[in-house]
Image (cartoon, rainbow, N blue to C red; front, side, top):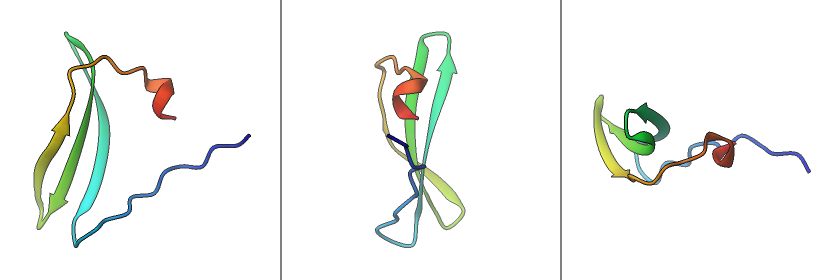
Length: 55
């Protein structure tokens, strides 16, 4: 079974981006909404995320 890259599907004029932040406390998934050249962090979790789960 092949996997396709997820494409951003903005619900408005904003772009949504996701990234994995690797810090001292482990990996953290951060989702940001970019509107008018400003970044708004809309959700983050302190749960450890395995990068392979998101590929």
